[in-house]
Length: 223
Image (cartoon, rainbow, N blue to C red; front, side, top):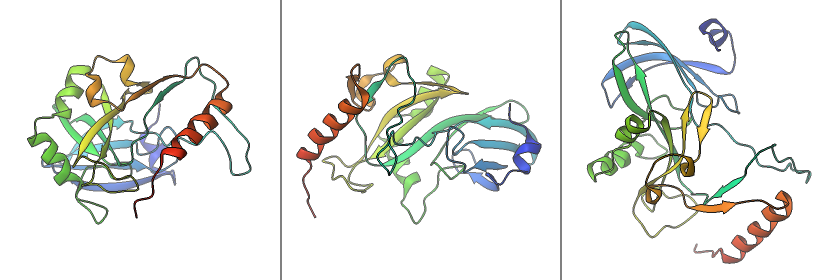
């Protein structure tokens, strides 16, 4: 279990003091920028000036199953599921508590403790519009009792893929502590999830390369 002294003395963590704009709370703590399972993790130390220690695990940084020199290294797994890779911004919706154990719901991008508009994009404005449109990710966190990782994509949040929709949030997985569950293993509407593409049961490398070649043939350069 991670502790405050370890976090304070680690180069992998940076301190922050910021406003959670969804709850108007002043929050102090540390954010982890180490690439791996703890990537983007929050260690909250106080809320509104009152001590309130809590750890929020987030969206891990996953590595490709191959290296630059061509060596393959798939992790060991009892089951390998495939989902559509979406081209957008990761939004992690989570809960935390203050010194009175009051629960708050908020959201973050990967290396920012709380969602905000920035030079990289008006991310808070986009999520606000989604909420106004009727989708409430905080309610889903409550119903499932797990924090949730989403991809925010669409032509309002342009990257490399040109989408035919303005904006959507697609659920990638649910997380509680070290437990991570894919959308197929939680009680949630599949229409709000990244598209499930089936289980991979054959040779991982050959299957990966076959799917990659099929997708590359469908790619079309627009600009």
